[in-house]
Image (cartoon, rainbow, N blue to C red):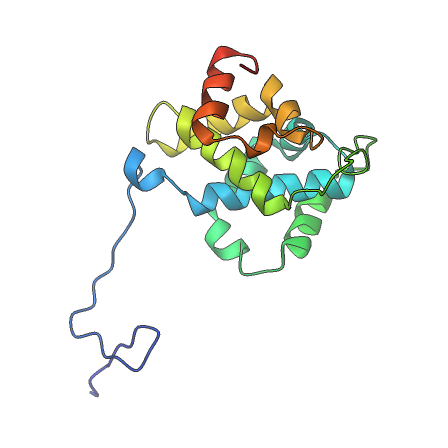
Length: 175
């Protein structure tokens, strides 16, 4: 039997390959790429179908949002428009009348940027490292007043530091 040689993204041989798995803890959860992808996809779908982001989460439902989060590492390999279309069709999301992009008087932030704002807030207010808590917090954040504040692109709220946005969320109002 031939010897297998493992390369890691270059011509460099990996002498002692190791498989590492991530565990959910506050340190490794920061910059959770699956959460960022999930939030960015929610933002993309909201813009495409003209729904508030809270409505998008409700329309997708727990099963689809959980699936997106769980398989984000695979889904991100596809164009986000294709993935969005798949979930729009799967959840039968029709067009709405919410158009925060059309109402924006200034430069519209990218859906990845807004996804990152949500990702950071959800990370910062999730009570534990457990995946179910992350998803529960995601639903709570999108169902709260702060989702509308983040979606108002005529303010600078979404550009504020993550600590400030977290404190506003916890206080239940813009401080």
